Length: 123
Image (cartoon, rainbow, N blue to C red; front, side):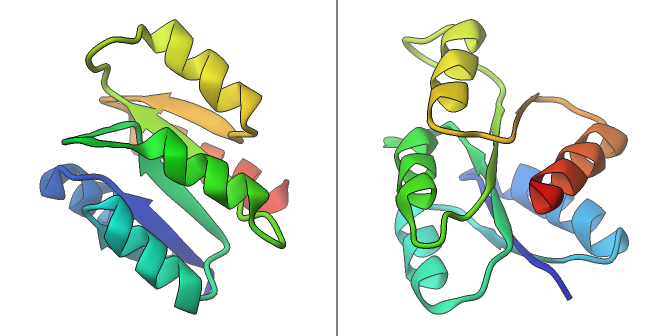
């Protein structure tokens, strides 16, 4: 099965996204920090990642940049509900500049998620 990592410090969001992915036939792994994501990504075989931008003191765009530079690159989707210091437009511009396949704004519907994941896996 296709493995996808979901990175969000909000456990409810991470679990909800993971459940939707699992029900669609993917294997989703939810993690709640950049350190946990990095640890699993270094030893796993993930086809992609869905990354929240604002996570406590972490910035998900840092992890996204690392995935874009990974060999081979690991495609990713950014999700955001807004946060301190940047508008959603600024988040979108930054996500686009580092190669995000899509940007999802919370709350989003399962069909939006699954369309973005399909695009990510076919990119």
